[in-house]
Image (cartoon, rainbow, N blue to C red; front, side, top):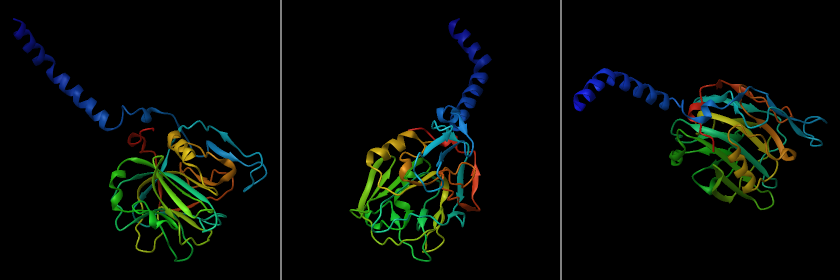
Length: 280
């Protein structure tokens, strides 16, 4: 009798249980159960750096708005072609005698071969690069190649810190030192690009980029670890040394208070990204 009752139960409710299981599986794949998908988001400009004495100054510098680490509504999407964001008239670039730190979050969606530029300084047609795969390739930008396949389809925090006093560059991936070595070949310039350099045999970035920050100092390992821990919505950590801050949350404006706004070309800003992100 008990086995008969069990069979009748399965016959009656089996299809309903199967349908519920399929729906739950689909929701899981879509990231519905990812806590980051349910976190609050903020629009472009909701948090920004305020410089009361004007662009480039540091006296009484502070943040204003909703700066509690909420997720951005949008991130920048690049499709591996000529899409790029160009920033002109920057006062700081990595030369052999100064210090610089560049940080950003990225979601790589395609094998970067022969090489993909994420962030670069571009003086005319002269290009040198930082390669994630080789400490000796530190130079004028950050370039990916196929050796970093472990970073595909996952949000990663990348930071490059260069010391002007020692000439040493250090690369961090998700808050952990990944490579270090001499940073040679720097050429002063005032133009930077995000997503593409369009020359030197390197391809455009294919994927998502968010929260790009540029500093005129060498951030420490502890500071970079703290930036990673604060997540993709983290605000600049050392305001007095902040040159520019491009959240890429719906536009390419500089929310670091110095008006180094970027000019996007072919770049799409998308809200469809949260399901792929898991907070540190």
